[in-house]
Image (cartoon, rainbow, N blue to C red):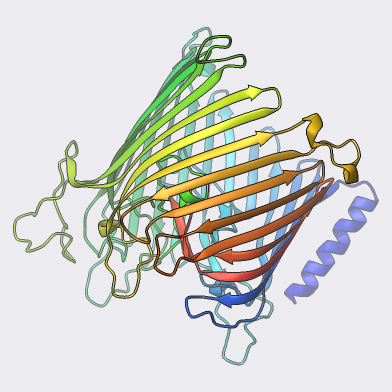
Length: 564
């Protein structure tokens, strides 16, 4: 029946478009991975295919959207998505008075401290809310959002006699989410002539989940609130973001009855050739899910903003920091400075210097009276001094980057990274059999070069097109974990074609493994075809402090993306 309805909707949409009743657009992606080896035991397994198709139809004030997803023989971390079906569908109507969405939608209040839902297929995250969302502006300067619904988890579990690869429907959380957000622009209401811009916002989110625990009396309604303020004038800005949450015993916090709170302070200053930003963060017991027993990346209602640099270089991503919603205190400072042109240090084109420093500690925890150990189940768990750092450093990182344009065609980027990762407490890294989690200290050196538009790069097979050649040399040294690494990459880019070869060599490991890869791709218009053959190391893949474990594998991957 569901298939018939979808087919009818598609034909009706095509008919409407053919009669000039609106516009149909979207995008499509398919990934196919053929394995030579998989997992630590190098097991043989079937090829993995994942795909999605987004269709968006617009007609006047009306928008209709659908996203179909397909997962065939999924890898670890995506096993619940085996099958195919409509993962996201919505109808949206928007006019001057209101913006109403019915179906699956994504939303973020402020920085996400108490609500952020989003889609990231690489992390296996799709925590959309299925329900109703209404946005309105009763008068200029005041913007209100209300919503109600349940979060999408994955496909519904299939019966024993059903094939795992079959038509699937969404599984939604048991918890019901209700939320209200108000953003206020003070300058639009009363201070219209002020040079200082003042914006504030207030949010409230509740989740209702039945108490079915056999031993504990758990709150069925958990509420969280958030207030924020941003003040900016010319090149200076200051932001304050505070959130609180009532006690929410769950598998994340070992079922303690501790209230949660979060505070983020940020400030920025910039002028020509110089900029600095500084931030402080304190998080306490802020894991917030629509089901108290959910795990990994499933059913998160909120999002904890990371206060560490988001790395892109391969060796710099080996020891990432995953956000700790149960407790962390951190700071970060970024300094950007451009040494002026035509000076001894700046040279003809100027030189850019970027410095980033970040560190994170756990929070102060002391034993309350009558409790034998910290975080003991069915108790308050601990007492905490809000202004006091915890005794243990969880993570620290210093990044120094120098960007030097040698001439109009050649640029060098040099980076030094010193990091400390307390994996004794984070326990996020893979360890050898019989090994233990360690406090990891590492130094990373990176040199990247970019050569383009040079007359010496003209190749006979491609006519007048001048390629861009990019290279990377990286080295990571550490006495802990798997020891030293070296990495090399060379990449050739043409107008529509790119080729790259790289190798990560873990020569500090007794087994001295190589993780090589060769890639080629072709772009035409809004379409892109990429082919990669190589070996993937086991480890954490992180985006914005949110991580998932990637299994070791080797083989061929083909990816096609297009939009229309």
